[in-house]
Image (cartoon, rainbow, N blue to C red; front, side):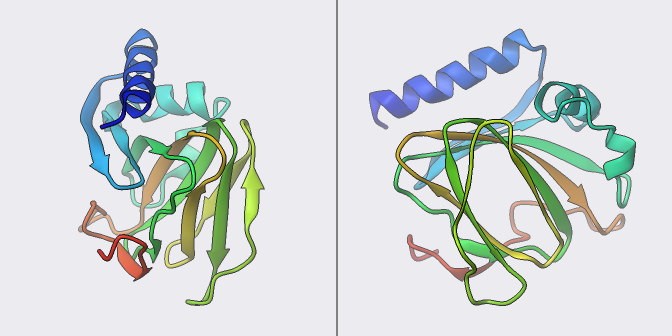
Length: 165
């Protein structure tokens, strides 16, 4: 792992600790960067800090929400993907990132999102997060859409992937 990547991850970990969040998973192994998973019991606290006090009750589809922080490296792309059992909300914390969305397998136009900007992704909507010139840090809340079968990391349908996954 590069020193810069380690520095970014350690900085985010420190920030989350200061903010009082319980990190339940830290993954630095993704070819595009990685993520932190926050305790689901802290969803409202997470929304208060990272989504300007958005009321999590308004976000609940099936009763379960999962907060995460995504870290995307410069000039890398997550897979062009969608999910069967979740919708997502992203809000840029640091850096400028690219987002591509579409209701079909054909990629739409690149949108640039700056810190403070957010996007809502519907269940089944194709999407891709893209690192542009600098490291991007994005807060994310998963909205689980199937109460009996909550979404997890395996709930990814990859339409295209730069890393052959």
